[in-house]
Structure formats: C-alpha cells, structure tokens
Length: 247
Image (cartoon, rainbow, N blue to C red; front, side, top):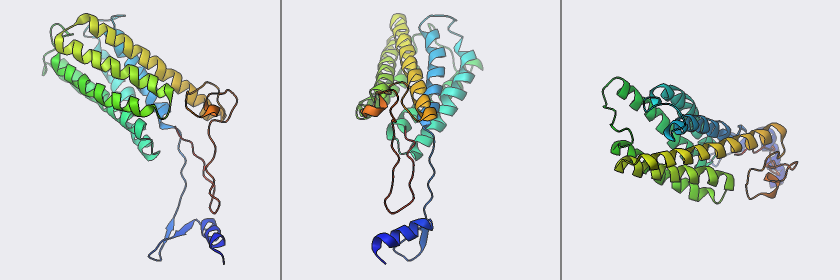
C-alpha cells in the first residue's frame, strides 16, 4: 500500500500513527471567533466608563455602580474570550482580551475596596498616581498588540491604537493631575469602543452569513468585498477536511 493510501486509511479511522507504535486520535473542533465576544465585552464596559470619564454624564462616584457590569461583561466574558483565542492560536487576541479582561476584574476589586473605605478615594478624582501607573502598563501592552495587528487587520489596529493612546494619556493625566487630559482620554476610549462595536458587527455578520457584509479591513480582498466568502476551508489531501472559523 502506498504512503498516500495508508494515510487516507488512517485518516478515515480517525487515528494517526505515532513513532512509538501507539495510535493518537485526532479530533477537529472548530470554534466561533472568540473576538466577537471579546470585543463586545470590551466595547460595552469601555463605553459606559469612558463616557463618564469624558464628562458626558454622572459623577466621580458613578464607577461604583458601573463596576459590576464592567467586571462581568468587560472582565469575565472578555477574559474567557482571550482564553478561547489562545485555543484558536490567535496571539494578538489572547494578549489584548486577556490584558483588558484582567483589568476590568481588577477594576471591580478596586471599587469594592473604595466602597468599603479600605482604599481612600483620591481628591480630586483625576489626581491618582497609583491608577496612573495601571494605565501606563496597559498602554505599553496594548501598544505592542497594536503594532502586531498591523500584520493582520487595520480594523484591529484602529481599536488597539486608540485604546493604547487613550491609556497613555490617562496615565499622564492621573499621575500629574490633569482634568482636561483625563477627559481627552475618555473620548479616545469611546472612539476605541466604537471601532470595537463595528468589528463585532462585521465579524458576526460574516460568521452568520458565511460572506462578507461589512468590511473587516483585513489584507485578504475577500474580507472587504461584500458578498465574497472571507474564509476558505482548510483541506488536507490525505485526511478529513477541517473548517477554519478563525478570527
């Protein structure tokens, strides 16, 4: 039996021979794009907190009421999306969703400590060097993800670059106590959330219809032409065909 015929026989049985003589079962498990949930969680949490930060509504104590929603949707849901992105071998989404999901969970813990008077709320609220260094670290990590996204999608670059810039500005605003720059950072976060919601819509419509409805600004032409199929199945000549759901 030829090598190709032998591989086809093994694939049809769902077993791949290993060097030690034992068989290893290979199972295909396509998953939905994790960033659909991750970006939705990020956008929802970021918008409600950033719009308050930008001075659109509320008071400096409003984050106490916003923290539970932000932690569950932007924190837990987004962090889980990051772990699913890890399984999907999407390094950029793993870093971005893992980082910001962790941040929103920490945001809840901080607000609980403030509400319980374990941590003193800074006065004025925009002079908070400790939180400033949170955002300093977030700006660096998100900036790295934004640079890496240049190789993947301009849509992701838009989300991550505005997010990194806003984080850097907010870091400086908190460290040096600038109310005006804190509001500028809030506006940039709102813009980043808007880009994220657009990407959620584009990715979800593509996943549901199997065709591009809204451009996702990837470098593949089919991902930006309405009506085209944005992804092609991965087919193995000697094995069962798999389907790459992708990101």
